Image (cartoon, rainbow, N blue to C red; front, side, top):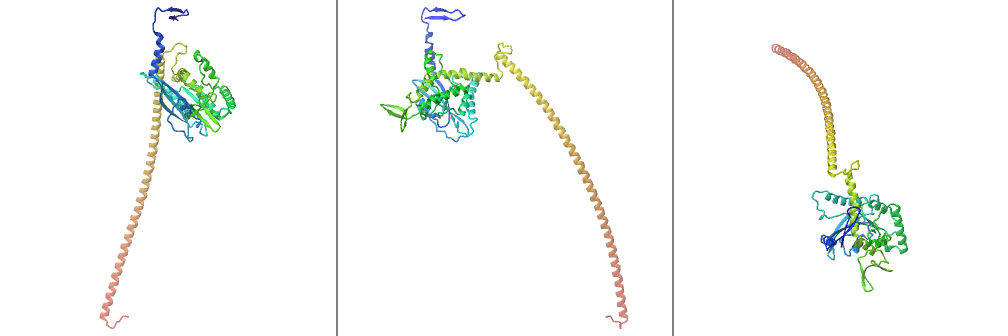
Length: 431
């Protein structure tokens, strides 16, 4: 056993006189990881009916609960389901996220937006937990997407515009692994040409898909070989058929049987090896060190945090905080002054409006008062005229009554005179 010192450029090997024990660090790390368990989150993107749920059941050799998605969704909805799996005393918290309704709408222009927003929301949740004073990251459920299985329809022609646009929007946020779903729908020669065409279109459109790492010598050879097989052509099936003396997952057709785990029939075994058995930890690491770090850096830069000042000198978090605080206080004071001036202006405008309204009310009152006085004068004049007419009528009535009484008195005296004459002269007769 020896010890290498890496202080400075000159390295020297120091022999140890006995066993120290730090060679057990890998065992300690394994035990701690096994006790704590692992989490892995898969995003399945593809049109309805491409067998996303069936492939997940086949990959993890189980039957996940879920209902078939309908084709009548008004928009794209992301449905997340979390399961606790156990294999050889190793626990895995698996989260499968499905894109319900993806590609089912007539207008597919914004189909990628809910997916991007969902991925960013998971990054934001982790970032908020990191920024807390009291963090509990060891118990925090990491919901960031570690792998995106993009299901391509087995058309045999070329990628759809929807596929290219969506993968282009996602390649900087998640590890994309393109797969050709239901690959038994096209012939082997067409499948080879289809793979070449897909790879060519991805390169020409600048879509960065996940490449299996080749920097580790233990997996460099197999990963290099598997990179050449992308995109994987897969078939999913939970139905087991008896082939020979063994029960195997397969699909039965009138013309024959397609074996899911037969590498001459499809690339399902390759996908399972690369995704779960060989590169699961690298997918988790790439999500944290590449995609999340990019989101985190952009988010903190938007908030005004920087590592260096304009002179490229180190800039501490405290200085950044103080600078942002002073900037915020200055902006707050400026906004307060603007609001104060706006308030004063609004008060002046309101006072002017009130004075104008008061002036109009006074003018209206004066008009109504004058109109009232005019009406009152007219009524008084009319009343005086009516009173004069009444008095004149009374005078005429009195005169008429006087004349009538005088006439009656005169008629009465003549009647008495005649009666007297008739008494005195009985020979007088009247007709």
